[in-house]
Length: 265
Image (cartoon, rainbow, N blue to C red; front, top):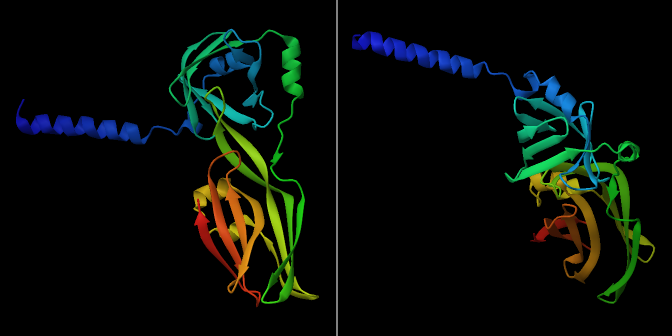
């Protein structure tokens, strides 16, 4: 075989390989294993355990943890896909056994429950949306330069939902949902209102990275001090049940102008 013909064959095979790779369908469009999906239907416990961990029903997985939201699932080849991006490589699957690798690469072993009462209990459970803060009102009087000021802070839970992915005790990524807060601040000098505003977490977007802000709630606002620049309030924007928290100095001048400064994170 001459060199020209050899290179033509090599380049031809490479082109076929690249075309085949380019034509591979996204996971969402690939045909799923209906037999594997049917075997997954039911309530699953850790192997040797007594408590339910999750239930596969139809196209959805429901968790025993009442704070975790249900998610869609698919089985394509030897991989279990849950939600939009989470995947778990199946090591073993029978009618009553399921072994897969979790997000940390650990082998998780589950067995299907035959307890009808456990199935009924799982089906009756409804996932909860969490509210971190109760309605809270603060009323503070401060003095500066012989003047008396009255500060009102009201923290109000809303129905605005914030989703946060987290890893549960079984190494599976789940989604918890929380209600965000709106915080109202009013400042008076005698009967004259110097400032009044409702604060939402989006108003602190310039100080908090977008990825963190999307999973955070407007957690708290507390009066800190008053000086020549005006009134200072410590505002916390935090990821629920996580160490990620941004502390912001919300400043309101005596003329009612607002400004912010990042204190720590």
